[in-house]
Length: 152
Image (cartoon, rainbow, N blue to C red):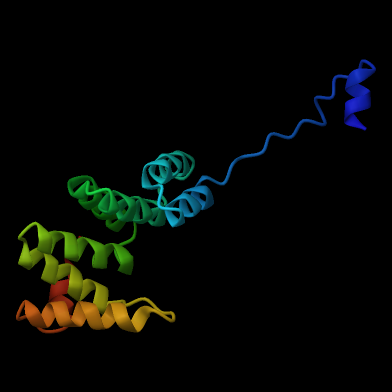
């Protein structure tokens, strides 16, 4: 009916409802397709709408890692952890980037923080085992309260 009202002289202003795009879901879909650059653009738009969403920052860090922008990925993981200190995926991802950067102490700290609050779900066991093995390889033991208390 709004079309006819506008056509016949009505303003139609009441009928126009702008729709916000779901940039986060768009970014996730683009990532699944392997288009990480476009995904990053959508993540940036999602972050503009939700600037304190740690999960968006974590997803951006993952996409940045896949595009080999390691320094940016590390910054995004750290920012996500400022917003949510127990975000397991950010600790996990950051730990392995720090290992690549030659920071075994930082990696150990984040692996311990990850294992102190591991994710749940069907794939969790493989990530937990991977983190546990990485700690063993680093010669470190499992999570300790002192090690995880100051984890960024």
